[in-house]
Every structure is written in C-alpha cells, then in structure tokens.
Image (cartoon, rainbow, N blue to C red; front, side, top):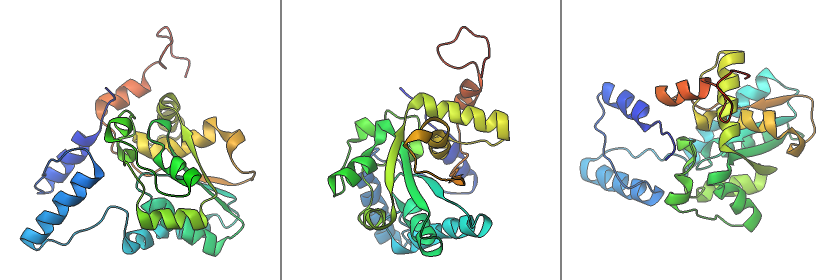
Length: 234
C-alpha cells in the first residue's frame, strides 16, 4: 500500500478545533456526506473544485505567475478535481494568450488525461486512484465546470510515474530546500523527467501546490533512491 498523508492534514484540522467525519474514499461519498451535514446544521458548504467561486479564487495563482514572469511560455499545473488548473489556465490565457498550460497527474490516477482524450469526463475507480502516493490527486473524476475550463484553455495533460514523483520531492528538498507533498511535486516531476513531451519555450513555471507530507514518507524519499545499494547517489 502507498504511503498516505491524511494523518498530517487531519491532525492539523483537529488542532484548529475541527470535527473530522470519516467517509468512504470516493468523491461521491464525500460530497453526499458534506451536503447532508450542511443541510442538517446550517453549515456553509465549500466545494473543493467544481464551483465558479473556487475556480476564480485559484485563478489568482495564474495572475501572480504572469505578474512575476510576464515572459512565461509554459505553465505546469497539478490536476486533481481540476479547480486549480481551471482558474490558472483562464487567468494565464487572458493575460498571456501565447503561453501554454499543461496539466500533470500521476499515471496511476490519470482520469483528467483520459477525459481530455475522450472528449467527456471519465471516472476512475477509487481502488485505482488509491494506488498513487499523491493522495491529494486521488480524485476519481474532474468536475464538470473544471472540465469545461480545461477543454477551453488547457493544451494537454501528461502523467508522471510514482518514482518520478518521489525523485522530484527529493530534488526539491535537497536542491531548493522546498518541502513538497507528492501531489504538489508532480508538476516539477513533469519538467524534470518529461521535458521532451512539453511545449517548446524558454520560461517554464511549475506550480508546487502543497507541502503536507507525512514525515515517514518524507524521510523515505530523502533516503537512498529505490533500487540502489544504499549509497547515496541522488
């Protein structure tokens, strides 16, 4: 079974006074349970990605990218439910139309890639997406609104392997002193290991979207690369 990071995130929520409700690991179960709790207690439901307001908020990332690097040619964005890439792609496309936006996801949870190829949202089973170490990207299906944004603004979706995700985390930590969770490191993994598959350009931006990594996993990632004899050649 892959390492997971929910313990880190759950512990942080509890420390801030949240009550955590556990459900089956499917998008449908999470949405249904959250909806019932909101209706029963008058809570405000904050959708994770399939909502215009969420997409607009995440679009500020694209705005900041173009402000900081007006010469950006290619933007690499992690893809889970699609909210982040929807907002980023809309903002970048509006401000720098010539830039290319590429989504990145684990090859063990490649529903967005399949959706773009099929011309409709494609759903993966929870058992399939649960195999990837990138727990933040284990969404079984991109949202309807994000999918429409992706069709309009995203130039393609590529996938990275589990080993490439781990090696990207390792290099981010060792070479740039940045702590990235697996889902946050996929865009950098695409730049490091799939450059030939990316659009041409001089200026690339990869979005590092999270640092909530399980300590045991992080220590394992920082150790000798898998398959080697214990000597650190990373």
